[in-house]
Image 1 (cartoon, one colour):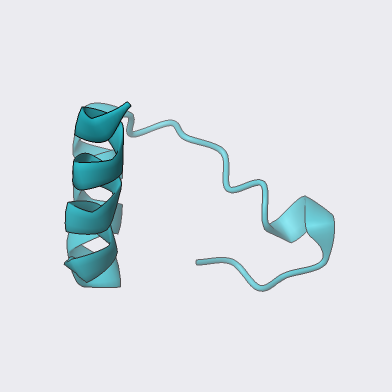
Image 2 (cartoon, one colour):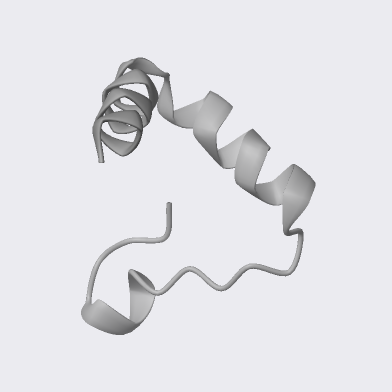
Length: 42
């Protein structure tokens, strides 16, 4: 659990653009669920 918490805190400090690039590199067909919840596309 501590490892998860440390990893989560590390990710929180990363810039949004970097996070999206990481997601799209490993999962290029990912589905942005925010749009279905009424939020703008990331």
